[in-house]
Length: 430
Image 1 (spheres, rainbow, N blue to C red):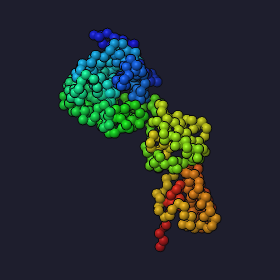
Image 2: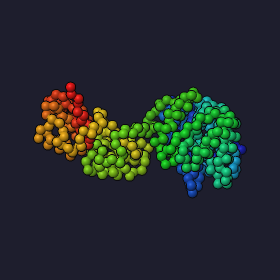
Image 3: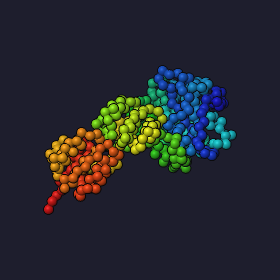
Image 4: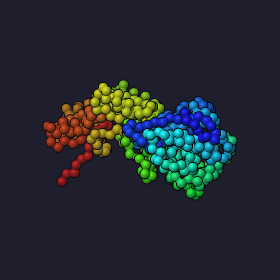
């Protein structure tokens, strides 16, 4: 507990997180949002960890997370001022400043390098904090900042007016993140806020994150958001002369790879290596809450992992304890798996079940091809002009294995089919 604004005595609950290694560390002050609807501020959990806090730890910052008056274990109560939304935030900012001053004698903290950030109500309070231009504060990060006051029926106009008031006082650069599907602050509101803030003299870079999941107001709540805001914040901090290198990657969850385009996530039959039991597990995976990850391996392992801090890392760790060749197949609603050897595009030469269309094969070869069509993915079928053929199924790299197996005994081997597609193209002859 630390004392809040001395003009309004109250004890504030704070959390201080330190990264590994020797200090002194630059300081990130991370300010929380308001309580959920119908939740008393006192019942709000202590703000002690978040993806944003882990981000700053990964960059070598100490992280201070103060609880506002009346929230969690903090004493007192926030005094609102109707449509004077900036006035409420300024009083909160005095408490945040007092919490920072309480670190003055902490030798692990470098108070000459401070960044202040916040989400929702915390973002609004962070903008008010910056209006005091405290020594050592170099940057402000506003994630969907704003305030909803039940006693004010002019929210949009009041936020815009408050933004102008704060912008006129602030000399510290800031970066603002808002989205098109924000459940609290629509684009017409945050664009007007930014316009008024900068017109009044504030230095603020606006980042429109577009549509993010079901609610862009929750950008900080999901691992999926990291790829959107982390590069932007890294660049912004670097521009202000603040640390931005990823010194401790272990603090952050595994980044989500981009979608590979291999298949639609709902295409159960496209998932490689699986037997019938594995396919049923994958169907269950598609019903799990986000974030989620599906892990598989060539030798029969498959697993669905959801929620928690890092489902990708948990899944890969569980897989590697029992087998080799573990791979990430899907995260959330995207397939991210790629073949070790790229496959040619489907050629349309014939349908996959048309065994008589396959060139070069005799009766035994066509029987082999028919068997190939019944096997599980991933698989590949290769043919040679002398009638040779070879297929591979369920291995780590069936394309490479089938090509190698054929080429060891036959010249001129070429891919005919990969998985459920014919990729054969007749070569032109002179």
